[in-house]
Image (tube, rainbow, N blue to C red; front, side):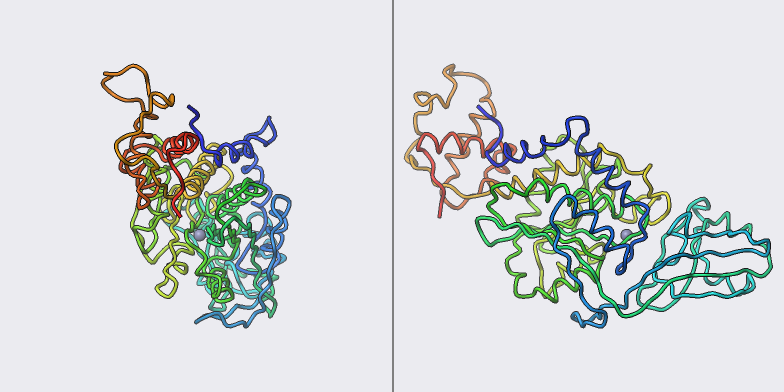
Length: 446
Ligand code: ZN
């Protein structure tokens, strides 16, 4: 008996089309390496350049929403761009230099160019006393400010004196950019995959999410899909708020969704449930992780985190969870210069992509069926569906899958219900379905 559904065979073929010498994980790591130096923010050139890189993989549609546009209780902010920034000491040395790390600038800093004392400069310097070697990542999107982020060691070594402070940035009317990729399926119901792309040189949060989403989208392209898929590459918070405000008429089509972030570190997979807590996506992801033979964590929904906060706000209450590895805020590298190319690994990216693929396979095959021979069991042996040797202590998995599928296919149980009840992977159940359909014992329920 084959162990993979038609859908999974196709997705497997697609994923095996990669360059034989490089795994998907390595290719995603390479993409992260290309995007790493770019200074991204919630608006501006860095965000656009990053989406342009993703267009080499998938034909993203780019949207520009003018600054000042009202989006529910929020307003699309002015566009921020930056060319250079530094702090020079009296000897003319650049002691903080944007060219060395874009994390050195408080993201969204307004321009400044003047000399000042250390005393005047200090309130604008941000460091982490508990992690004295790393540069923190800080932002000030909605309150005009300027500042520099630096290691606590560098800060502690600053001497009294006059410093030249330059931030060559602009904050002016422009637009908010986001990327959207829609793949039509057999049905209008959609699966949403949403990724924030607004962080500068940080790898796990959020370049890993951008890479895994892009590769998942690429794999799904050109495949026969039951569901329609919508991939969003957006700035965090304001991006999902903007998309929801502009697409309120389409939101009802989103039946399942996942927010992708922090999928490149070596930690175990973590699933944060949707606000509903018992949606099909919640059951599907837990099912996949449970049968993955690896450690995993499930956490309940909380209104803190990434864009699931907006998708799961009460006015939308979408079935959107978040599938990550180490969740935001739980690893010491989080929002620091230590979330770099040494922190994410190809193996973790590949494993994360595989888990997303399995969740999608699960949703794709999670249909209801009708047993066409419901009065007593059909004679499976004469159809070659059952072992000819009776009396064995335990039936092999495939036979159990056939028995459970026949027993629960009354039109009210989905394949995921059956798989959960039988404690078998859904792909074993969907494989049993293929065989039972072939023998005229099962049909899809309408
Ligand atoms: Zn973040």
